[in-house]
Image (cartoon, rainbow, N blue to C red; front, side):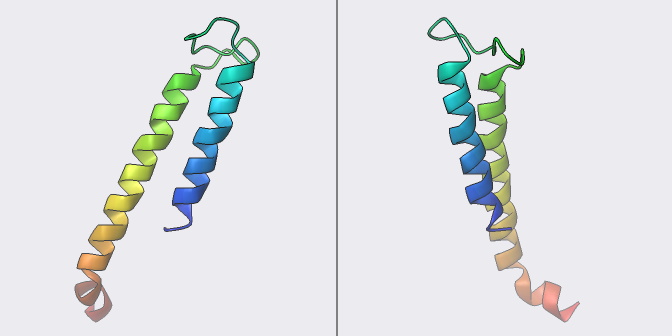
Length: 69
């Protein structure tokens, strides 16, 4: 679970690079190459990081109950 945070963060950085080089107008979010909405991909990555942190915290809080079964 913890390993997912750097992976999602790398995805956000990668998408920001795509946002810089694949759009022609500053503030535009749609890639001219793939046609994807890159701003939506960045937001999705941020949401996935938050969800992963919440899951990690919940697993840490309930680890004794989970281990006991």
